[in-house]
Structure formats: C-alpha cells, structure tokens
Image 1 (cartoon, rainbow, N blue to C red):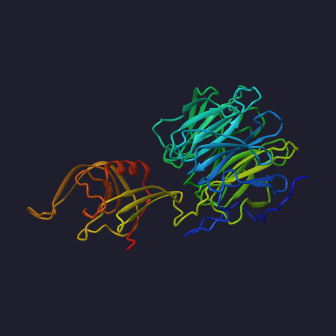
Image 2: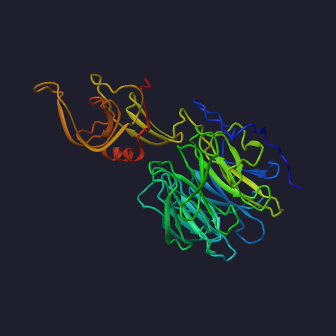
Image 3: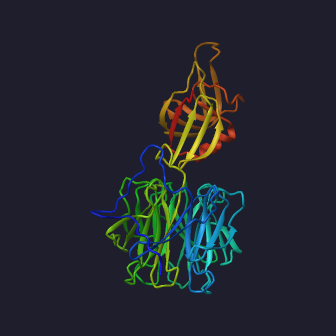
Length: 472
C-alpha cells in the first residue's frame, strides 16, 4: 500500500495559467534538489527523495525513467543541474540509490539533460545525455550500466548553448531516431539522427530569430506507429507547444501557459487517463511556479485542477513519467530545476556594472556566470548610471573624440573590438591601449580586457539588460 499525501489542488476556471515570479528576491521552500513522484490518477504524492547529498551545490536536476535491468520495474534516472559534477544517478522506484557515473569531464559544472530509450530494440535501454547551456552540443550514449558506447556533436562543436534531446521512431521504420534540439543562443533547429548517430534531416521549430533554445519530445500521439515531434521554447518566448510530423510540417500548436510567460516549457508524454492515447505533459520552466499541466493531442486541457507540484516554489520543474512500480498506474515525476532564489530580476540574462568596485557581473537565470575587472569613465567623463539594454553589437569599429587642436583629451582608436552599445554612444567593449583595469580611465565607455570582451560579446544578445550603479 502506497502512502498518500495530498498536494494542494486548485480549481481551474478557464485556461491554464501560471504565476510569474515577482521582482525581489524569492524565498523558496525548496533548498536542495528534490524529486517528487505523483500518482497520475489523483495527483497524490507517493514519494519524495533527495538525489544529491545535503552539502551538494547542485542547482536542480533533470530526470527520466527506464527499466534498466529488465526486471519489470523502472529506474529513476537523475542528471545533475548546474554547479555539480556531471553526474547521472540511478535510483530504484522507491528512490533508493543504485549507482552513478560521470557523463562528461568531472570539471564540467553546467548541468545536463538526460533521456533513456532502447535504441537497438534489444530489450535494454540506453541512457542519452546532453549538456545544459554553457556546454557544447555533445551527445553521449551509455549502456544501462553507465558504460560509454559512443558520442557525437549534433551541432558545431564550438557552440556553447548546450542541447536538448529525445528519442522515438519518427519515420515509422521500426527503429528509434535520436532528436536533438538546439540550445540557448542557437537557431531553433531540431535535427534527426538514426540510432547510430547518422544525420537524416532537420527543420526549424520556430522562426530563425528566436535564440532561446528548444525543448523537444518524440511521442506517438495518434497511434499510427510514427512518433510526432513536439517542440516548446526553452527560454524567452511565449509558451507555445508545437507539434510536427517527420518532415517538419506543423500539425498544430497551443499555449501551455499564459502568453506573457517566458520561462520555458518542459515536456513529457503519458497515457494519464488510460484511454489508449498519449497525453502531453508540460512543466513550467525557470521563474515559473511548479505548474504541471496535461493536454490531449489536440492541445485541450485534460484535467480540471491546476497542479503546483511544489509549494511556494518558482524555480521551474523538469518532468518524466512511467509506471515505475509496475502496478498498472502511471506515475508522474517532477524534479526542481533551479534551487537558488531567482534574484533581483526576472530577466534571463543581465549585465550588472558596479562603478565603485570597477567590476562587471554577468548573470544567467539569477546565477553569476562571470565576473570581470573593468575600467569605467573618469570623474570628468563619467559612465552613466541607470537601467539600459544592449541595442547594437559591432564586432570591430573605430572610436575617436575631438575636443580641439592638440587637446590632451583627443583620441583616435582604430579596430576597437567587441562593441556592445547600451546608451547613446556609450558601449561596453574591449580595450587594447591600456592595462589599468580596476581604475577609472575611459571617456565614459566600459573597458574590458580583450579576452573578457570577446566572451561577453558572444554571451550577450541584443536586448540584454544592463544595470549600472555604484555600491558606495
């Protein structure tokens, strides 16, 4: 007999909606990565466990399920989030630890995605991993015991947007295909590979200007022995779920949450109501409540309640499904994606510049990505304070200023690299003509070392917020 602990379930009056994170630091109730297992029939909490040690710095987790040892019970596969070694940890259906392995080099700390599927129809699933944003699009395939089988780069290996991955027979040939969707900062392409990683075809899931990354899921929604390809934005776009056929033709689309929510949509599929057809499950991403929704293949909501898996938590959830205990009832699994407080901003990327410290801070999803020593404007030519955004990027330009004949403030600087303009003619850029970083020496721009400017130029996008202040 399973213990039953009921979650808070509220009545859904109209369409699904999501509570957006408010400005100001959140105080989440969840302080470490947590996995919850729900009964799909009444949404009661069957079990909760912590996949990482109490002193782990893991910022959440991603999850999958599969019967790895062919005993009739599905294991729970947990991949570490940011700030932890790239561990894949295996638990039994009771949440008891079985074994673990490193999916990438031990010093990689950006987190990873995980799925599991029987790639070769031999009765034993493989475990497939992909890095989160900050890592290359390096897809790795392991056997059920965590032994590396092979790997490949789904996109240019120099890209650092990570990738998202799913597996399913999308062309009806009886063999599963590997679907890899582009990560953050990349064009929203979904690529299809055969089970030996040979490229077959690809298509755009959204307009080519969208760079927030794509979540992808293969699921046979109409029982025609061909899995549909389901896509959703990973970050920074209205939460529209799009369903495609094998050739990339759009079948239908629908909103999973309120149009203004941009935290991303995580995907899973399960026959929740046991009618013989798969349903689409969505979990709200970063900065959203732990909002789980269920839709039929047409995009119609299938449950009356709106369900928040975790109370007072706005870090987003990854989701998975499966009858893990072999009792004939599907379980829905959810894992916390982001543990740290959301921070001072709802923006996914933001640049902070502290004039007093002469430092620049680059934040992503509320977490500090990089910190640089800078040079801002002198007292005579101060850098403006306030809230701005990058509105132009120029890889190389000439900068000059003329104050009169033989004036000591005149300057003419060719080939200024990695220029990010944020207000009038003020910009963040690389500086090759001085090494006095940490002091105020510029005419109002924000000077970076060349290597730092190159990193920031690749990381920031048009529209990235820039907040300039003085802490003293």
